[in-house]
Length: 89
Ligand code: SF4
Image (tube, rainbow, N blue to C red; front, top):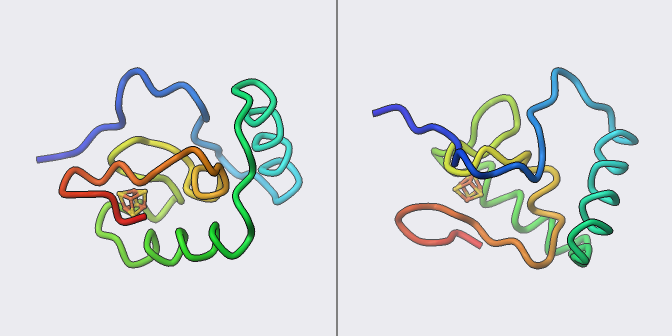
């Protein structure tokens, strides 16, 4: 069964190619729009390590469950892992 991103997820878009500055701009825009908080760097790194080992990690850098860019979702404190068998972080 192919997993598709949640149809109502509009927080971020899949990029063709985004550099670090563009990703950071997207993150800052999302934080402002939703009044979210940036996660501490160590927390974001720990989250990404879980994603790296996860079978739902798309090679293009998105989560196959929610469709979010992992390099952004993991940096938002209020977000959590949407894994259907239980959050990994
Ligand atoms: S299911 Fe969770 S751990 Fe897996 S890629 Fe998505 S956000 Fe990361």
